[in-house]
Image (cartoon, rainbow, N blue to C red; front, side, top):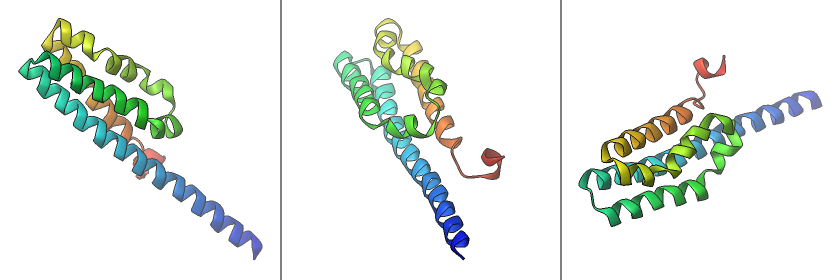
Length: 125
């Protein structure tokens, strides 16, 4: 009888880790995506101060809130994302079109990484 309770407790722990991963990754993805969209709008308008503020907000949010990505996803998968995110200001200063393309890349990578953690059969097997 004790084995049954131990198995149930272990199953509950596994399910809670999956739920925490999904909720945490989704929260960070939604927040960072919103900031990236705001930065994209600022780049499209072309106001330098607004671009710097929006991109700084993106960087700060990632520095403060990216812990779920480090906990639940192998960080080697998003090294290129971080490199691109922290160099968006360089891209914005050189070429607005390139900056918009790189912002789109960051958004796509975030969405893809968050979707890869969905508890569906395709991701489990």
